[in-house]
Image 1 (cartoon, rainbow, N blue to C red):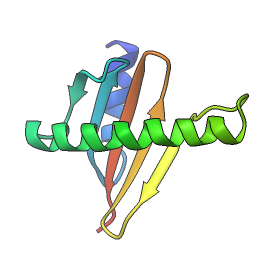
Image 2: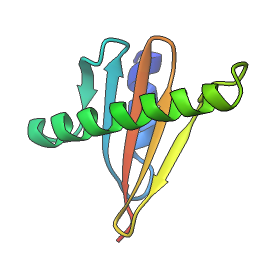
Image 3: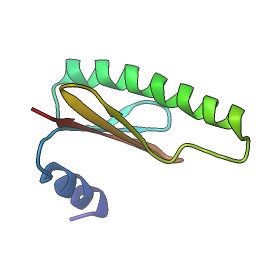
Image 4: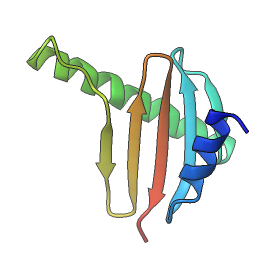
Length: 95
């Protein structure tokens, strides 16, 4: 089992994880554990949010960069880990 597969398996085993999406630096979905429509809508929104957050952080301090973003709503917690080559998005159900 590759490191990638092991990481996905480990994340999926966490309590409440509803889905995992991995996209490459161009925004193409590499892996998803949720249906296609949900993957596309989450990916489009979360990539925009991630890019705007990165821009805001750099405007505040040009030597700083986004390493992790956590968004919590009444129903879900979404964790985004951007990297140079890919972005991992984990959607956790809070109910």
